Image 1 (tube, rainbow, N blue to C red):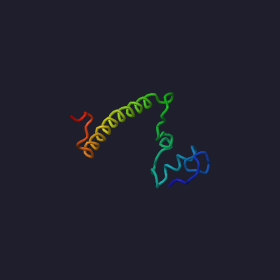
Image 2 (image 1 turned 120 degrees about the vertical axis):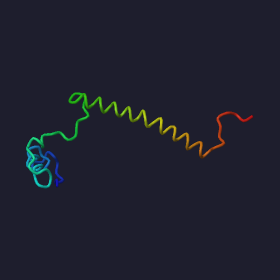
Image 3 (image 1 turned 180 degrees about the vertical axis):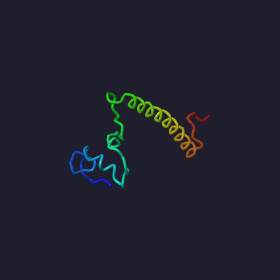
Image 4 (image 1 turned 90 degrees about the vertical axis):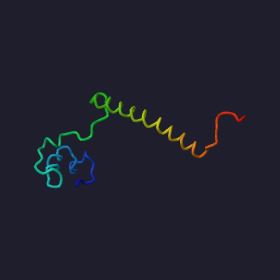
Length: 93
């Protein structure tokens, strides 16, 4: 649907002034108002512009890392135990 041109090129369908008429085509969103083209689809990861989104994203990055990293460690230890069932950190008597 969209041409492969820079969003700064006036011929591009993603150029700021062209978005309204391009989005309202039959291929994309028929009968869409020009307001639809003004909507920011991809939120910015920027503390000054959208602090709520920034902190929400940071929270979920920490939550995801804090959940997955320990689980990956447990899986790694389980794999080690399966490959080396008789291994022990204690000295043999």
